[in-house]
Length: 261
Ligand code: 48F
View 1: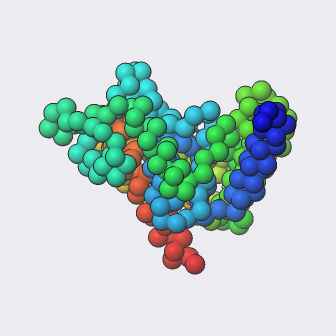
View 2: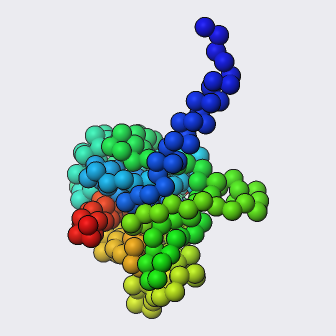
View 3: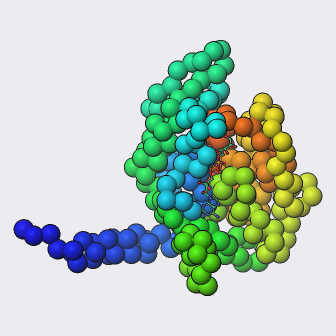
């Protein structure tokens, strides 16, 4: 049988269109596919929730591929071992309290296991705005990242979701939009984004977990965007807090979804 180029094109267009149509109404929309967003997506999907993750870049993984300064090893602490075990990612102890893993194995496994658990990832797609109703975020507004990169004037599409998770990392992009464009105050000390502080690994890792919560009705934050929102320091090249934050965000959102049925 000779391969037909048009059949190949039709297969891609029909299958992708079906996937897009199937994900216009969600339980949870996640902005950002770094470690925090991927781990959150895995646990939400595992809990049976309908969840999609939008990642601006061609590949998910965020800041994890590069370890520290492009040395592709990640460091994490004892409390995060259970997550590496859950995903069957190999690691070894460096010294008491410090563990390392290959960042390529870690990220590729997070992506693969999350997708197999039921998370749908839309790569090359950016969350550029939110859907709002009085006093609540009710979904995301998305567009091809290439539209933004090329500076084209093209309107986006909208996806309704019961909750949105900002896992966009340092730029805290979704919370920024909500601060600027949705009436009301954020659930922070000043009612606005407090802003990320300079590096303090130990304190930052603790605060990442504490700061993982609902920041505006319908909108949660996880990972580095949680610290940037609530004014915590950056942690540098240690990743346990990101993984634990993703898991905590998923647990909180599952509870919120189930108590609001
Ligand atoms: O930056 P990122 O890895 O965030 P994280 O999961 O982890 C932070 C660590 O990597 C590291 C650190 C300590 O370990 O400080 O930086 O909190 O991943 C965020 C992802 O979100 C994507 C971005 O391309 C990256 O892959 N992203 C950012 N803004 C948007 C977005 C957006 N508006 N729409 C879609 N994706």
